Amino acid sequence: MSNTVKILLAEDEPSLGQIIKESLETRNFEVLLCVNGEEAYKVYKQENPLLLVLDVMMPKKDGFTLAKEIRQENPTIPIIFLTAKSQTEDVVQGFNLGGNDYLKKPFSMEELIVRINALLKRGQNEISSEIIPLGEYVFNLKKQTLTFHNTTENLTHREANLLYYLIKNKNQVLERSFILKKLWGDDDFFNARSMDVFITKLRKKLKSDPAIQIINVRGFGYKLIY
Image 1 (cartoon, rainbow, N blue to C red):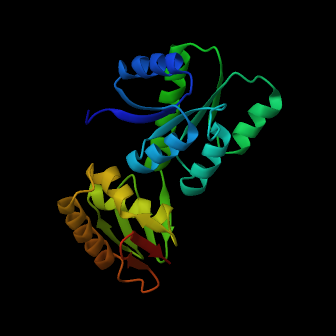
Image 2: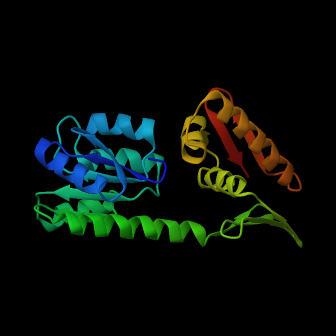
Image 3: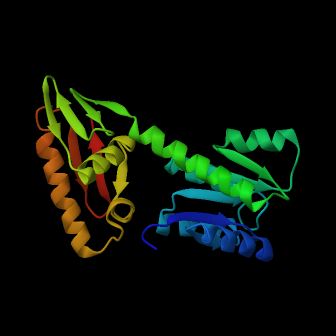
């Protein structure tokens, strides 16, 4: 399953949920199927999927409420809403809450797959092209370089991605479990020790600007401040 893309699907109609799950799994997606919004939020926190497919009308917590909560924590994860509603104001509400796309039931599986792939590709392109000012440094994620004035230093792939997530969550705690699962694939003890080493390396590479700090928030993770 290492080459699969993990998707969270929240759909309270059992038959439809199973059809979507099985169809996506034939296209090399790993699908986490949930039947209500509360369950979906717990699974999201535990599994860190790359994309969300959320039914709007669900018990315990509807798709709009779920999306709003997740958007406060993760402003970039792609979200597709599924709904039987067809009123314009419902579509507008979905986009205002951070939805990236909207499919009205009934829909074809091919259309859903095309939209999923388009959002995933768009997200990769946005990340890979970013050149990010970082204090007195310039961070280029695509080239995996860190430039201080006229001096450029190369980063490893993992260093570059770890720094990217720290920057995207600047002045907020980047949860240890989240980043370990995202970049190492598992949050076990040995991977955690490996991440500590990478954090130390990044601190050394950023030491020329004393305004930049990577703080260890004991028991939770790390926070980048600048």
